Image 1 (cartoon, rainbow, N blue to C red):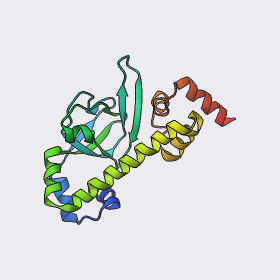
Image 2: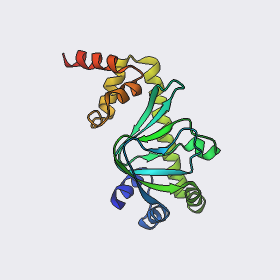
Image 3: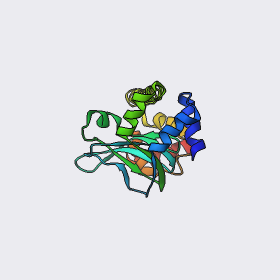
Image 4: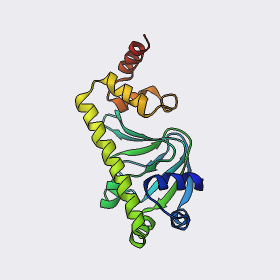
Length: 191
């Protein structure tokens, strides 16, 4: 566990073992079963997490129950409804486990303490926010400029190992299409 966290954090910012220990000492490992939520829509989030194993998705639900998947978060991802957490407002989306998963959770107040005591943690936060912003901007561009087939090709390229782990209706909701349309795209691509 510690190796995965260390490797993931060091890809973003150079922290010493003792600095990483600061993070792991205030964090706890929690298990999530399939369909359980790390954060629920309407809830004011008070934690962030690092996915040790399993898979999550950020999902919006419309009033009529239609799902819109924002992003998939596999192992070695940081998960949070950060804007809701810092503004102390309810999250607009769920963070749902789509596999049995384990997360290293850190309470927001502990995270804030780390940010105040060591500027390297602010560096990590900036890297995480930059990564999230870049992902968001890229997704917006794809939805505005590309058709569903090209969005699916990008999904296959970016999430190489996820197609077999994610249900078809979730992939379709990520692409902004129906499962039937996704089946047609898959059939066309296999011909």
